[in-house]
Length: 256
Image 1 (cartoon, helix red, strand yellow):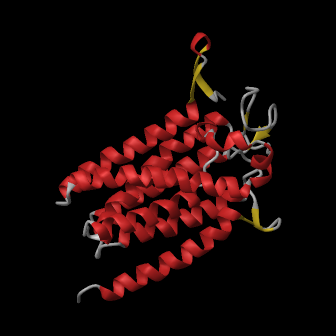
Image 2: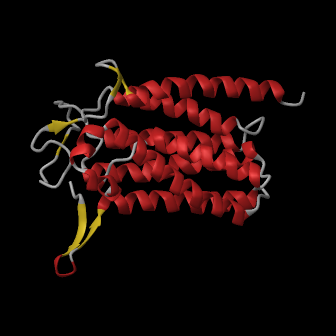
């Protein structure tokens, strides 16, 4: 589509659509998190600081897992390691990084972990819904060849997707999946019966949706089980099982 949104040739400056939309998704989530934090009586400044650390951890974690999966390419092109704005972040790597840093931050500052997690989960889904359009414009995370009526064809030579071939728009599938999850979590947020419920429902819904969509992906993203389970599907199975376990555990600990 349009990997480069604006290019200033005389300045040798390029604004990549991927980076702009990922940043837009992040700031959309941050604004919503700040608003809900205030409504829930949480320290708004602490939440904003946490969002900043989450962004850094997600960027590093997402890029690290992508580099691990595509290590052969990066061994031959080491300078490309730093060019994350062109595309190349694995969500589960970012999630692992973000959760680890968030846990440390919330323990250090004595924030109510599950209450904060319930605020952040829908914001994360919203950020993904917006940010996945960056993947669409960059051409990464593309789908397999198909003849469905809604197939898309990339023609820009700077795109990361195969050119002039009708493909499943898996980037849009991922965006819609996150948007649906966002709607469900917003609905659940006002009806939850215990803290942590919204966050772990997010883990269940995302892992299921992502597992299914992965079957329509056509990009080389690495396999945990050759020709059967992609890296994301493999991690997603553990996320699903652990989310169900935590949901049941927190429910059983709820005061009668």
